[in-house]
Length: 176
Length: 176
Ligand SMILES: [Zn+2]
Ligand SMILES: [Zn+2]
Figure 1: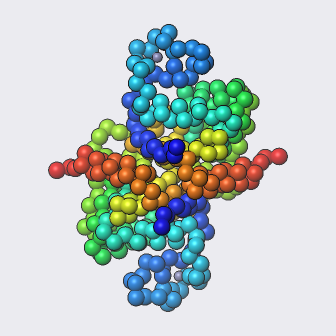
Figure 2: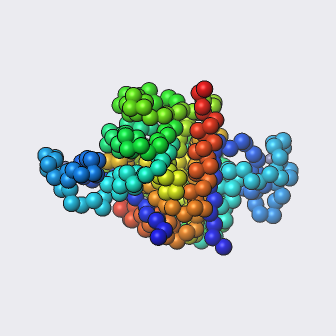
Figure 3: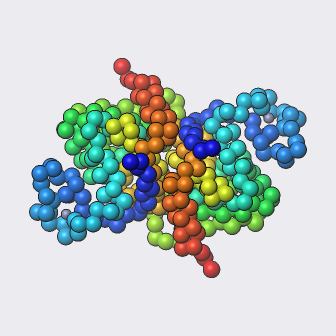
């Protein structure tokens, strides 16, 4: 069945401990006090789509400082999912960036080597077949404070050009 | 026929005088020296989609300083197309913003009245049926210097939530 979903932000904070905990954990031991039952909020939906990756996750995002999104990416990497991250040259070094943590976890991260002013994309590809794309940077301000949108689609006519573009960027920005 | 197109930027500069001139003008008198024949570049495609509006154009964009995009929007307004623009509270006042020019031309512009940190969307709706959405702000840097993407689609399942969201934002940010 075709997936078509548009997620709008800001999103009220909800606890995603249950989603992020190991699959056999219930998340019920969490002391956060935020209801766990409601998982229809935009951030939980975003996280669920990312965590559905079984083979690969390609992330192409200007700024990446969101702690739970970083945990999700590291969790997928630990599960054996092939994770590739492309980010902006300048923003990878800013305070709070998760890029260093991803690299330390052994995840392949590349940044723009070209003269482009900014790598301003905000999209991700799950298993090469589900696209998440929009205005949302992977930051707490974007998720909780800004008006933002993320389209989630598995329409091959839409996904294919992003997949091709990611692959080209990945190859073009090989530092080796 | 279904429209599905993904435009990637940066885009080499091409002259869009032919597109922006009145419909009976050929644009051939332009002295720019840039070839007019090639109209397959991303910016010309973006402009063409916007200029295809016959009834309405809804623009929801964080920063808007691009001169030719401003001309296009004013041209549509002059043609009788119903134009509505929502922009960020803070960025409407920055140097080079076209928001003042749009207002002077009689175009309705609203900005976030809520406490949202930023209105960070970058999408537009042509005649309520064609969506242009992605990472691209309407600035010269975005078009000519950044890595950016814009999805163009008329899939009703995708367009409808953006249309509903725009209408809600428009009503919520009525200053009256
Ligand atoms: Zn909790
Ligand atoms: Zn010219």
